[in-house]
Length: 255
Length: 299
Image (cartoon, rainbow over all chains, first blue to last red; front, top):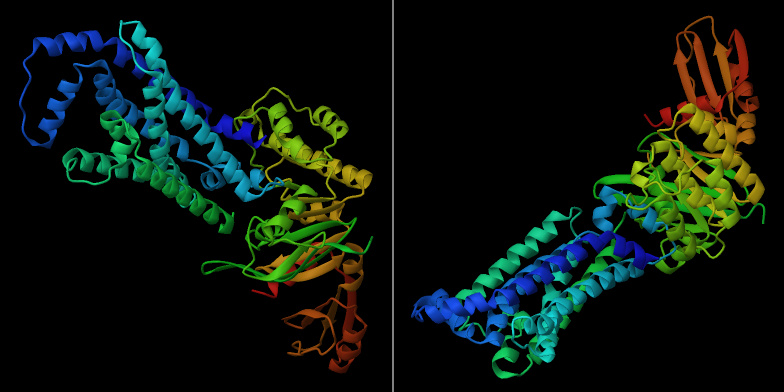
């Protein structure tokens, strides 16, 4: 029944996220013919600077459907929107409910705190997995509607990279939600952190040896076909550490 | 079994930073009793109840419920499995309906009483399809009580169960509690700052003040033991100190010296004759007087 409770508490965030991400996938695919027409009609620009190089590369990649989907959706729209929902699903829980109501009843049940926390985390992670896999898996279907094709394998790999690497943002928000009693501070802190990391990736893309944005977008898979195993494993370790810290924090906390 | 304590606490201390919520609380609640936990607002009642249920950890001292250490996480799960609890805030899940709250809670308790669930739903006139957030304070209290009573628990811990209720609703809740406790042979430990409530349903009382137990015992026993000895003098009352055991409070006002004893009056009377009062009067005291006098000692 704890699963049911966690589902009730997070379902609207999940459903809204799913609808938005599916809509985003549809709009990305169905605007491609128009994008292709405009790119073909315009001369290729030669822009300087980090941002200029990114724009030039994006335009270049858009001449190919796979490149367009990756640069426009996996690297930008999906990554940003999914990241926001990862943060939103990480907020809340026992500590914020202790000030808003409901936590004392939950704590009076014969369930350990680690179980309460584990079920809450597992529910949100399952929802995030759906958000990371379902919209990408629609791409092969939607692509057929505009006479293009997109490989199911590519969709799965990019969705999996997004989930595994992006879970760090969820886990960090989840941890901060055991520190702060309101739902906004954890979300704002992690969104600020994500924005800074995104800017670093944009400006220092060629210099940085490691970037969570590159991991989430599955850039190495897109460019070379290889999976960033080390980065993904490191992400799993960081997420597990944050979730463990959250469980320790809840275990020692007084309500 | 009848005299074995269900709840025991010794020297329980709980600090929240600089704030000392509990300062050496001692508790003994025998099985089968209805024990009132009396204290002013902020005396430490809620903190003590949270410690018993494993929601807060004591800074020092120990608490045991059913003989299990409350500060041990695994043991506290077992304590909560055997205990019904109603919090002061009656905080339930606003987004659930009454029926959903019941469906959610029941599977946690292997001895959930479906027969009582049906009975209390009808008796409390709880609308199953109404969301918790749409319930009045009284209805929330009744739902919280239903969820606690149907657990098939051996112990009921209630934190200010009637706070915020009108007199009619208070009476209804208290009657339900007494009837349930009598029928199910369970132990009830409930906090309150309403002395009348405790006198109405409790057979034992623990009075705490500033995180410390100041009086504890059977209600009838306390009323038997506590006596007020009033000495009137034909002059200014002497500034006397009594060596008799159980002197809880001595008040001097003009020609009157008033002594509250927690151990009968005889020893005080023996001492008082040496002071040559013109009259001596021994009177029983009410629980209200015991409460007010014992917490006043701390002022």
